[in-house]
Length: 304
Image (cartoon, rainbow, N blue to C red; front, side, top):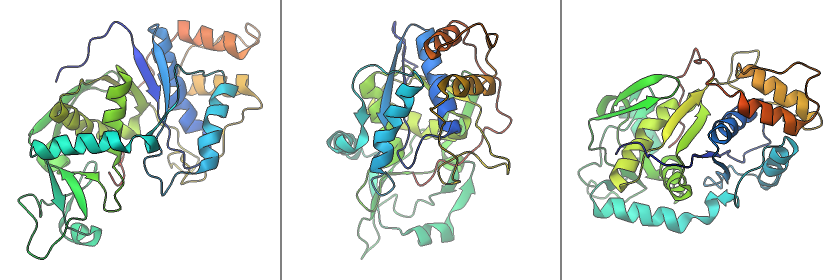
């Protein structure tokens, strides 16, 4: 599937509501916002609450308020993954009909005992690929990779090539608890929004190949990808809710935005040139440029 060619650029920010937005979240949000607006396009907000075991109601309410306080206004209604399970079920059914999804009866412990580690995490050894063993029942559903190589061009990192057998394997698309997995939900949501440009942290670069594999299997267009530098704490850990990264300071939105722009290595106006958040964002849109490469793009893409 070739990247989509659309006259209107459409970007999105898709945070997981497991806690308040932190500086690392803001970097990704701001980069995607500026990239879409600099192309004269739309910018959408999606709350990635497909994993309802980790989602927090307070964060679902806080995230939009935080973005608004920083002047990052989105187009259209907010998209919530938790309201779209029927859509994901349709996609899974389509993959089953195409023989590109199969039930898996393996436990996590069994997989860890036999799987090898690839660049994006543990690679499923294919135990159930040709059918469940006698006495086994389905715990989850996996995507059957049939393309030996996935290739794409990242706007920051250039050409990327993934061997699906040795680097990706057959990944989960519906979990054992019945929840749909990250990759399937992300692909369907982006397609339904008409997203042309995915801008996100470089730690998610390894997530792109499995998502493109799903796009190809489902006949969906492939957006352009841009992976931007990831923020780390003083201990060298990626800023995340898991690592208790502090919430964004919305009491000083102008200073907070300037800090994020500086992190993205964007041109900055003089300290006394502009006085409002709106003026700063308009200036940043007019001067948007691709940030430099992150020194460490690799990262795990979690349980999906």
